[in-house]
Length: 181
Image 1 (cartoon, one colour):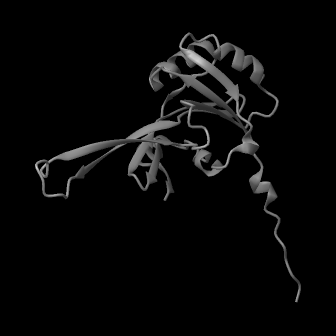
Image 2 (cartoon, one colour; image 1 turned 90 degrees about the horizontal axis):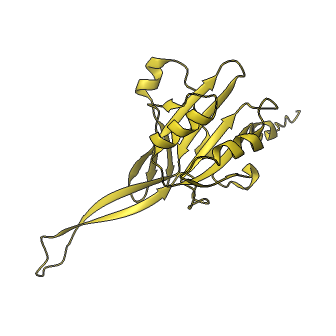
Image 3 (cartoon, one colour; image 1 turned 60 degrees about the vertical axis):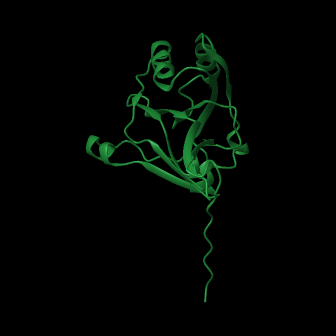
């Protein structure tokens, strides 16, 4: 009997470029400034990234643009989100009827806790000059820092796998889910 061996290395191949963005801007404002500087048109995707952790559930916003000429897709992804969990006091004392709210921050990529957003550029082989894009985005006034992320050092790469926006009907009914327990 012959033994068949499958090599799965081609599935580990990374075909995207990732930029980390540190800013105090809201997601829609950052998308606006990126659209203003770069020749793209990021728009809010209904396909938010849904996260399930032991603390609770959260949705990370996502702005998407597909450049059909160059076959390049752009994703602006929120990295930080807060979960507010409500707990009741089980002790019999003066404050026994009190409920407390605890806010917990979760991250799409936990190894980059200080990063506010990621700009993921997919299927861009040699058509884009990433250092030029980085220089242009550095001109946004409220961006404190922007830099390339070495994708080989990312431990939670699965959190960056998104389904492409195929048609409008699918966009309205879908969200992406990952869990970390």
